[in-house]
Amino acid sequence: MNSDKKLHVLAWPARRTRRTNPYPYRVQDSTSHFGVETAEFSPRNILRLGWDVIHVHWPEVPLRKGILPIRLTLCLAILLVLWCHKRLGGSKIAWTTHNLEPHERRDHWLTKWYFGRFLGLVDGTISLSEFGRQKLFELHPQLRSKHSVVVRHGHYRDDYPPAVDQQVAREKLGLGETDSVLLSLGMIRPYKNLPMLAGLVHESDDESLRLLIAGPGKSERDETLLREIAATDNRLRLNIEFLPADEVSLQFAACDLAVLPYSDILNSGSLLLALSMSRRALIPRKGATPEIAELVGKDWVHMYDGELTLARIQESLDQKLPNVGPDLSNFEWPVTGELTSQFFRELCDPAAN
View 1 (tube, one colour):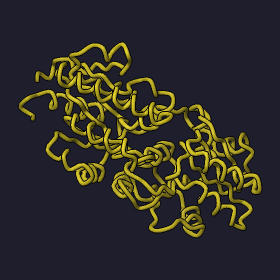
View 2 (cartoon, helix red, strand yellow):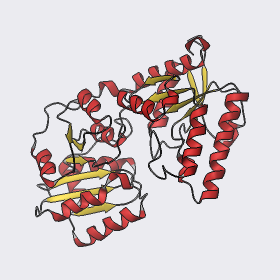
View 3 (tube, helix red, strand yellow):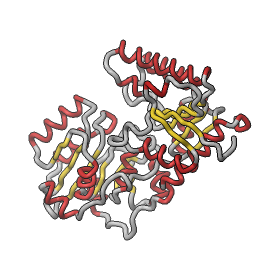
């Protein structure tokens, strides 16, 4: 395919999630500098055939909706739309593998049925790490023969306002200058083990320890457990709602350490968010974490094996701050845009297949 020819991409999503998750918007913005024009996966746009690429980010979204009949209807509709664009419109289906399978309901028959048919429609995959690509092929070996590329998740530095001084941030949040402040920010989901983290802080006899947990609730059970602990321990601060960009910056400015005790890690946008805010992170040695640590500097990514303990948290808090910030040169958006647009062109070129 002529590299000067403009490519027309229908992305699910493109810009719609910019406020809650800027990643898809940043992809379409960065690829626009390399001859790619991206439209939103909307009822109006899906009626038009002939897109060069249908770019899917989170195919599992229909599996999170309502009761079973609603989920089934949505899954059928998505599969039909993708099939029509592929078979009738000649579009290529590209999947950015943020998650290799859904976090929830992964053993349900509908999940297996829907995902199996979705994978059969995929023409190529974009992985966010080498680890992610290898795990993708292990879990879904039928994708080994499809076109694939590794394009690292771009940083978040341009999506949030500059951080204020730590002391100013702590004053605004009612925190002490000498407090040891931990932060876990993002959607509250079971695999993130936040009640366990809150329990560790509750068990500690360190009165200067503080834990901020912020983000929209996606697990009633975890929300209930967190509220029960917070009701008896004022060292735990909960903000269970979506946070605007300036509030996100404020929370990171106030903290000493981001703690991400996740049981299920592939690429971890939460880790990259902490690094984008120039905050050290404590995270299990799982998934792409060692790969990211090697690229940005191991002083910024503190990894642990086994169960998280108060001693391991304290060890990270006691470490001196690095003299230079995390190296995010491998996570610059122009690199993402160039590699992604090149992948789309190769996907559309019969010679590449």
